[in-house]
Image 1 (cartoon, rainbow, N blue to C red):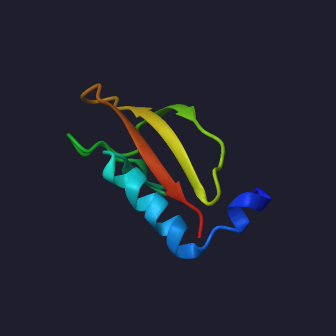
Image 2 (cartoon, one colour):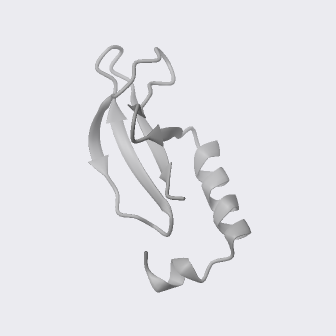
Length: 77
Protein backbone atom coordinates (compact mmCIF):
# COMPACT_ATOMS: atom_id res chain seq x y z
CA UNK A 1 0.00 0.00 0.00
CA UNK A 2 1.36 3.43 -0.87
CA UNK A 3 2.09 6.08 1.79
CA UNK A 4 -0.75 8.42 0.71
CA UNK A 5 -3.35 5.66 1.07
CA UNK A 6 -2.03 4.70 4.51
CA UNK A 7 -2.58 8.27 5.67
CA UNK A 8 -6.26 8.35 4.66
CA UNK A 9 -8.69 8.19 7.57
CA UNK A 10 -10.56 4.88 7.71
CA UNK A 11 -13.95 6.64 7.37
CA UNK A 12 -12.81 8.39 4.18
CA UNK A 13 -11.66 5.05 2.81
CA UNK A 14 -15.07 3.55 3.60
CA UNK A 15 -16.81 6.42 1.78
CA UNK A 16 -14.58 5.86 -1.23
CA UNK A 17 -15.41 2.15 -1.29
CA UNK A 18 -19.15 2.88 -0.97
CA UNK A 19 -18.98 5.35 -3.86
CA UNK A 20 -17.25 2.75 -6.02
CA UNK A 21 -19.77 0.08 -5.05
CA UNK A 22 -22.68 2.45 -5.77
CA UNK A 23 -21.38 2.75 -9.32
CA UNK A 24 -22.74 -0.69 -10.21
CA UNK A 25 -19.68 -2.67 -9.09
CA UNK A 26 -20.16 -6.00 -7.35
CA UNK A 27 -18.19 -7.32 -4.38
CA UNK A 28 -15.21 -9.50 -5.26
CA UNK A 29 -14.53 -12.57 -3.15
CA UNK A 30 -11.23 -14.47 -3.48
CA UNK A 31 -13.29 -17.65 -2.97
CA UNK A 32 -16.19 -16.95 -5.34
CA UNK A 33 -14.55 -14.43 -7.69
CA UNK A 34 -16.85 -11.98 -9.44
CA UNK A 35 -20.49 -13.09 -9.37
CA UNK A 36 -22.60 -11.88 -12.31
CA UNK A 37 -25.29 -9.47 -11.08
CA UNK A 38 -27.66 -10.59 -13.86
CA UNK A 39 -27.55 -14.40 -14.00
CA UNK A 40 -25.66 -15.21 -10.78
CA UNK A 41 -22.82 -17.15 -12.42
CA UNK A 42 -19.80 -17.37 -10.07
CA UNK A 43 -16.13 -17.10 -10.96
CA UNK A 44 -16.66 -14.98 -14.06
CA UNK A 45 -13.57 -14.49 -16.20
CA UNK A 46 -11.37 -11.53 -15.23
CA UNK A 47 -10.52 -9.40 -18.27
CA UNK A 48 -8.53 -6.70 -16.46
CA UNK A 49 -7.17 -6.23 -12.96
CA UNK A 50 -6.26 -2.79 -11.71
CA UNK A 51 -3.52 -1.97 -9.23
CA UNK A 52 -4.32 -1.60 -5.55
CA UNK A 53 -5.44 1.95 -4.74
CA UNK A 54 -5.16 2.08 -0.98
CA UNK A 55 -7.10 -0.95 0.21
CA UNK A 56 -9.25 -1.20 -2.93
CA UNK A 57 -8.71 -3.12 -6.18
CA UNK A 58 -11.00 -3.01 -9.21
CA UNK A 59 -11.43 -5.87 -11.68
CA UNK A 60 -13.36 -6.09 -14.93
CA UNK A 61 -15.17 -9.32 -15.75
CA UNK A 62 -17.10 -10.97 -18.54
CA UNK A 63 -19.77 -13.50 -17.66
CA UNK A 64 -19.32 -16.84 -19.41
CA UNK A 65 -23.09 -17.52 -19.25
CA UNK A 66 -24.82 -14.29 -20.29
CA UNK A 67 -21.87 -12.30 -21.67
CA UNK A 68 -22.39 -9.30 -19.37
CA UNK A 69 -19.34 -7.12 -18.76
CA UNK A 70 -19.18 -5.81 -15.21
CA UNK A 71 -16.71 -4.60 -12.62
CA UNK A 72 -15.96 -5.85 -9.14
CA UNK A 73 -14.44 -4.23 -6.09
CA UNK A 74 -12.11 -6.05 -3.68
CA UNK A 75 -11.38 -4.50 -0.30
CA UNK A 76 -8.32 -5.60 1.67
CA UNK A 77 -9.00 -5.78 5.36
